[in-house]
Length: 146
Image (cartoon, rainbow, N blue to C red; front, side, top):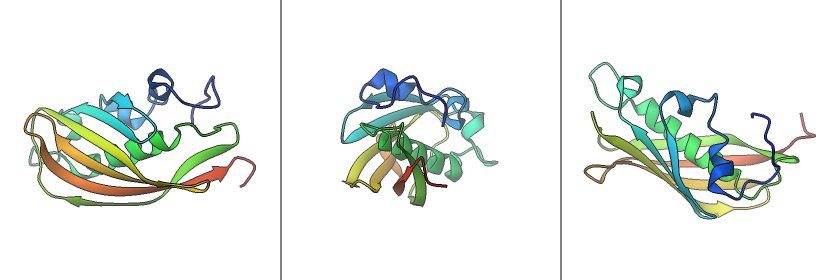
């Protein structure tokens, strides 16, 4: 995780500070909104996100899901003591897209002192069609643990 100037994220500007020098930056992902229960990411469909047939690559859907859940797992956590690390992800690809914008809508299913579980829907913005559903689990690893 990049060095942050703050130990607790509780604003949109602070969570946006997680993006530089990451995979989502290379994909052109932006954080549209965030609150204690939700996060919304938006990505333009581009050649960086396509598989050989010109469709949204399924792995990119998983990158969006993992990124939405992992960034949101940082919300209101003392990042000087704990960091969220992904321990499980699954996804069902339902449809694909070849143009437009892709949204990742993350919602907390459960959050405890040790785990954060999110449901993430990957949606084609222009048609509002559900492309993928994913569940992501993050573990809050203490920084003094190896």
